[in-house]
Image 1 (cartoon, rainbow, N blue to C red):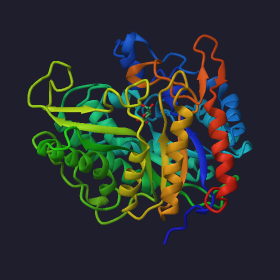
Image 2 (image 1 turned 45 degrees about the vertical axis):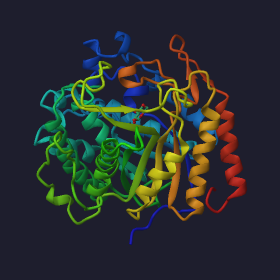
Image 3 (image 1 turned 120 degrees about the vertical axis):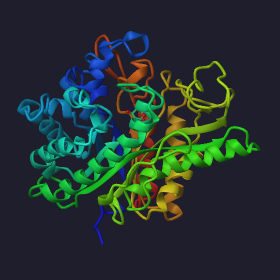
Image 4 (image 1 turned 90 degrees about the horizontal axis):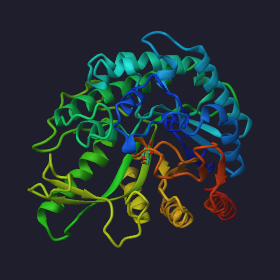
Amino acid sequence: MVAYLNPRKFLWGAATSSHQVEGHNIHNDWWAWEQEGHIEGGVRSETATDHWNRFREDIQLAADLGLTSYRFSIEWSRLEPEPGKWDRASLEWYSELIAECERNGLLPMLTLHHFTSPKWFAEKNGFCNENAPNEFVAYVEYVAKNLGSRIPLWCTFNEPMVLAVGTYIAKIMPPAIFSPASVSIISRNLLRSHVRAYETLHSQIPERKGPWKDLPVQVGIAHSMLDFMPDRAWHPLDQLLSFTFHRFYNLSWLDAVTGRAQRFSLPFLVPRSPVVKEALSRRTVDFIGINYYTKAYVQWRPRDTGDGKSAEMPLGIVFARRREPMSDVGWAIHPQGLMRVMKAASRYGLPIYITENGIADREDQYRAEYLKTHVQQIQDAIAAGLDIRGYYYWSLLDNFEWIKGFGPRFGLFAVNYDSFERSARSSVTAYKSIIDTANRDAPRTFS
Ligand code: BGC
């Protein structure tokens, strides 16, 4: 039996990732890809939000909002800009970031890999290389030994499914090659890397220190889940595809990290990969992190409809219908879907954190309501007996939204990209009052 965080201590958080906020991550694969002009409008991450220089202010903003946890990622390419060469100054910076969290009562949840890899690693085929787990684990060991004693909550990978599909099917991540066979290769190696990281974190963290030293080390993944549904409810192929996608996208990673089947495959598209024996019949996560944003309507489309979506696959996926309320990036606002994915994840019998949930909403029209309705789903889930331990809004700040550049605004705090000034959107007050009310009304689960 594993001891978990006190279930009465629900964590209220916000999340960011290194490349999206820090600025000048010049040694990673995304930076290199950006220079080739792949980002919408030809923009580059450049200074991003200048979090590297403004992290104290940002942590202060999070603390003033009443948050009790902060999820961030470490940039592997900063710590190891060249193979085997470790950058002490970057390590110091992350140590200071953690110290700032400690001073402000923000329990750190640390993600080891959030989409970006060092350029030298990517140039050798990244996680498609058989040797990738060894290289990744050297980095994990370095983090575990140097920072690990102060960190209770870990995500090894952010959205491994999105990384695989985004790179080799959707082509929205470097090197953006259509290669469904690579989806199974990378998934297998990500799983191998995850298992090794799980073991490393549980065996190589030195004596615990700091405000959370008595909490056990808990390791999970931050897993993207969508509420899949057939586009045409009556259409048997849409139904079949929607079910197939739910199994592949939502469940295959959860199955794999809980020692069940490893099904990183799709009929006629993604071939099966050899089984990772070291992940069989054992659990390699202590909690499940869910990143939930929206629904996905799935449609069988045998011909290219000319919209670019089905050129390589007889498939259409849309995230909202025309008249539905949706975010600036066209994702339907669909809080009921959060309940559905929480229920699906809870079948694995592990504690759950909502490691990301948020909306791109520049004018802040929907964000307060979005927060309220999604948190309500969590409260209902807890009342129904689901073990949900925390909620992280994505994102603390506006940031570099990958291939979409700086257009989408997910932040609780708006960033002015000329002055880098932060300003609170009105939904900051809404989030604060949700937290206060929850603490008052349900102190047993939300304190
Ligand atoms: C990712 C974030 C991203 C967010 C909004 C998640 O899939 O983890 O990095 O910014 O979605 O697109």
